[in-house]
Length: 75
Image (cartoon, rainbow, N blue to C red; front, side, top):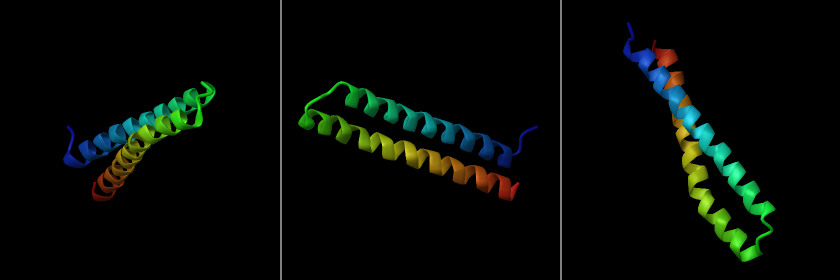
């Protein structure tokens, strides 16, 4: 049925998609904050709160792609 490498690939795909959705969410959140015409200090606070989420989503996507590449290489 499924071997370990197929499972690695599908888990990696799901991780990459979750990271991609996180990055897209960050983009829309920043655009919404910029369109709100917030003062500089409030805009800076919003952007600073988004940075860790953005980095986490990027790392999740990267780890997912690594998992896909390993599963494809080993399988």
